[in-house]
Image (tube, rainbow, N blue to C red; front, side):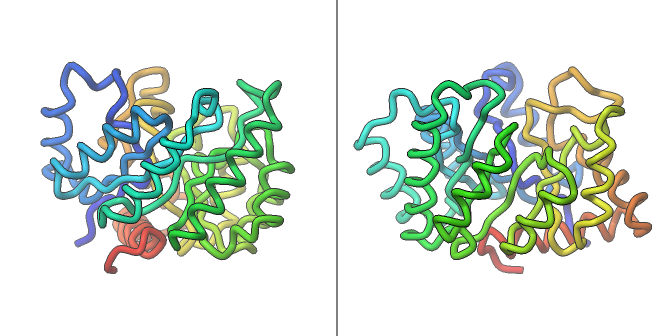
Length: 259
């Protein structure tokens, strides 16, 4: 039976400093089979590399979040490119994208680094993990202009309407579904889940952020993913086990791991 594949985590975050080892060691006995830890800053990317070397079931993505681009150097880009090319357990470039909720005033610089990191992913033949918050049009326009369908990937923590999901699905992208889909004020998430084919959905936590109801506001972890799987199973009218099996296969396929 397939275990859960958490396609997007931040276990390097300081929120896990007190019990990281204990928590990560407990995942497999709680049905979590694979985890992808996702870089957001150069520091978190370096920690991600350390984690993938320490834990068999943890894989990594390297990339710079739009809120972390201010001090990026050419040396940083060179390190990401070389590490992603060298390390078989680095499976994506991400998270990359646009964030107009926190950082709209530097939109031009965000766009520059988004384009540059898409180009790097295409050069490396790796999928991308897209962060897009209150930036739907610019995100999509850049992805189309850069032919991001050539590398593929996932729009993680999907926060837009069904019409936007259709555009990314048409580009061959996956849709990341996590704890925010359980929030009472997020009716559009149910519509997106209903619309998106099962073979294009990924389970994710974005932990330590976005814990699902009834744990909203607390530290999130992969242990909460059965709640998200149950939400999807109810909308799709299939079993939790089927949700877990299909989303695990989806993540393996997207990340280029053996199915």
